[in-house]
Length: 184
Image 1 (cartoon, rainbow, N blue to C red):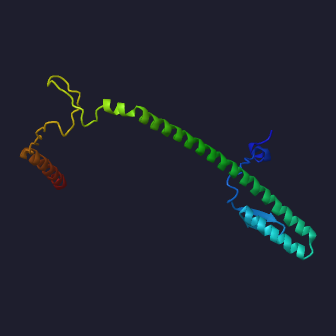
Image 2: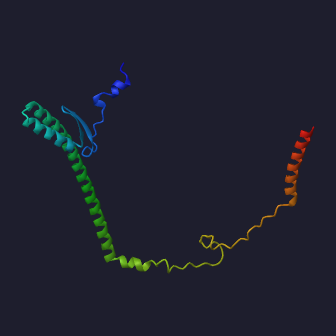
Image 3: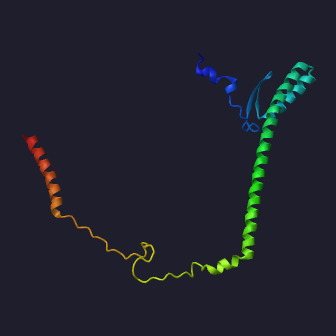
């Protein structure tokens, strides 16, 4: 039976999401050592190395550098296509939302032009609304702290002197008892 570690290292289990490849920094281990940078920077570096190798007459090294550059060029093109597809989808959704808003605005303007004035005349403004109260029963209004009658504040009783002396006396008696025990 295989261990779970060997299964998790399997290539088929890898998450192949492209993510933000355009701005991501890669470490490429090429024939001349590591090349680090974004895909576009790596492509430029490998193309420069391929030109240098070709000028020096090393066709094998030039081909190798070109293949490395092509690999990162493919990564970059796939990522850019995905970004373009996402951008187009967002633009399409934005156009649909704007068209819906425009339709709602047109309906609202049409209602106001055809009969919206009648609705305004039938309903009084909040300032003009007057509630009649008979003075009996519940008026339907909520009592707020500002409208409630003020309640007299309760006054606290001062402490009695007996409580103070009792606490002091008990403390004194403890010290006296302690001094008596020490004397014995």
